[in-house]
Length: 197
Image 1 (cartoon, rainbow, N blue to C red):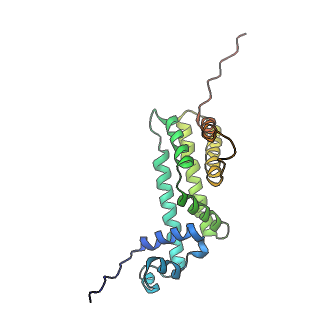
Image 2 (image 1 turned 60 degrees about the horizontal axis):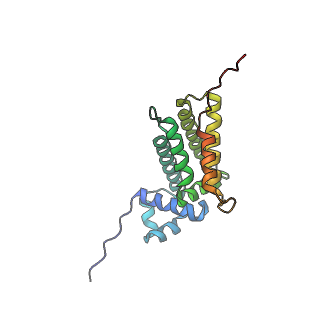
Image 3 (image 1 turned 180 degrees about the horizontal axis):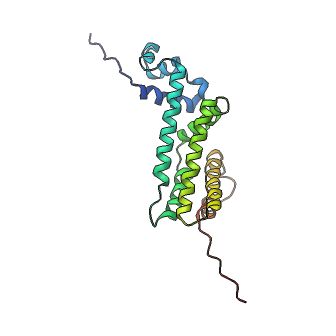
């Protein structure tokens, strides 16, 4: 009888499985036994890659942070001459087409951060990146610093708020409302013309 080759797992596979579990069960569900069962391996193989559960959780936090920051930079890097259109794209990407698992991981990270200082520091760092990068994009549109900061905060308040709400039954034309909100956040105000004397 031919033996099936043993599955060789690397550190990143364990971390990705931990992230999937985090989305489904929160941080309390991220346990070695649970992950080993999901991966169809023994708990012993976990210890080839991690000292303990805390080492895994640190890897989960760093992996999430690095992935979020990489994506934020990619989405918000100003493109000369297309900054305003890019702000619209950022709003669309993060509000209209966010994947369900990404939202669940985000919510689980924030719940984890409420109880754990290391997770809180990571979430705070990612949020700071989000706000700074969005502000840079607004500044590149010629919006003054204070207003750029305000719009950055508004952008993410909207993105996270809408991702947690089920508002499809609120109004018959949710798509129009989302377009209106996007315009309020992203559009440059028209220049003020001096009043005729």
